[in-house]
Image 1 (spheres, rainbow, N blue to C red):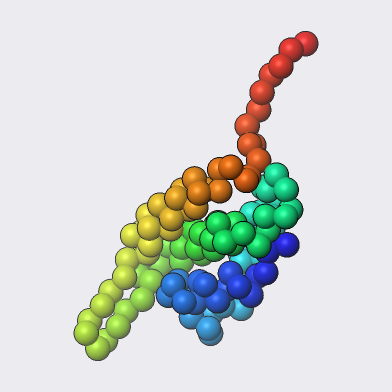
Image 2 (image 1 turned 90 degrees about the vertical axis):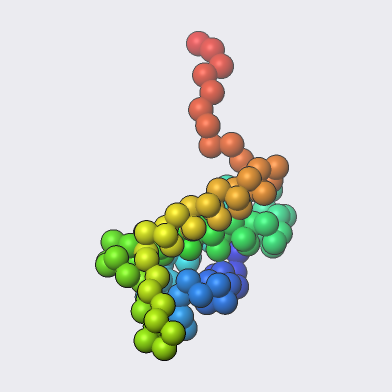
Amino acid sequence: MINAETVKNALIYMGAIDEDEASGFEIQINSACESASAALNNSEFEQDSRVINLAVCKALYTISLVKNSANAVVSFKAGDVQITSSEKLVDYAKALLLCAQGECADIIGDEGFAFIGV
């Protein structure tokens, strides 16, 4: 399985979460790792950077949805006055997720349904 600690560290590096709130998103991070691993055609790709990025983007998207539902402002900085809207974070996370899914298209399974015959 994809290392959840690696995904958590990437989210912290990206600024999506800080170290203090990381434990609060443990379920979302683990779920993203399991989901990305389960989508693979072959488990030998679990440590492929594209798959790890997919897990990071899945976690980021879920976390941004949670933050968006909690309030309209994700962060506020008093210094140089910086307000971050959670709605833009969701859009950003969705765009990253779509990009990551495209990059992994050749190594993840197709979840579509096909009716072959009776």
